[in-house]
Amino acid sequence: MMGKSYTFPYIHYPLLPVQFVHKDRKTPVIAALIDSGGDSIVIPRAIAEFLGVNVEEAEIAKTAGGFTSIRRTKLKMIIGKDSEKIEYNDVDVFVADSSDIPVLLGRDPLFEDFEITFKKRKREIILTESQ
Image (cartoon, rainbow, N blue to C red; front, side, top):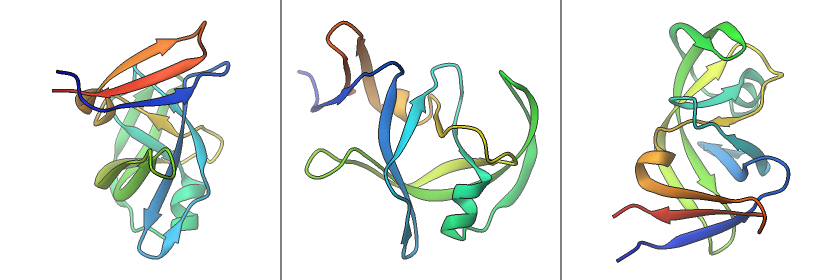
């Protein structure tokens, strides 16, 4: 038996609507890129500053664009909206030094929790809960 499925529009790029929450601050809905080549969730520094999060030193990370300094924090992340929401209450998030990178949704935790189907012709991204 398959788990619950969530369907999102697929327009040009595999983007999901996400919000990040820290204490009483919440970002607007952000288009986050599904990054099957990345391990983790990465946000630009500007989002961490907007939320007022404390970040701990992490390390130098190798990315597709070269090496970058990253820091780590934990945030609440909401994918989708209204009744079709997926919530992670305490997810590891890496903060890039740069503010001109997109929000990247790497394999952890998204690919651990969902089977992800890209239907480009139908313009759909389907997340089905893993069993």
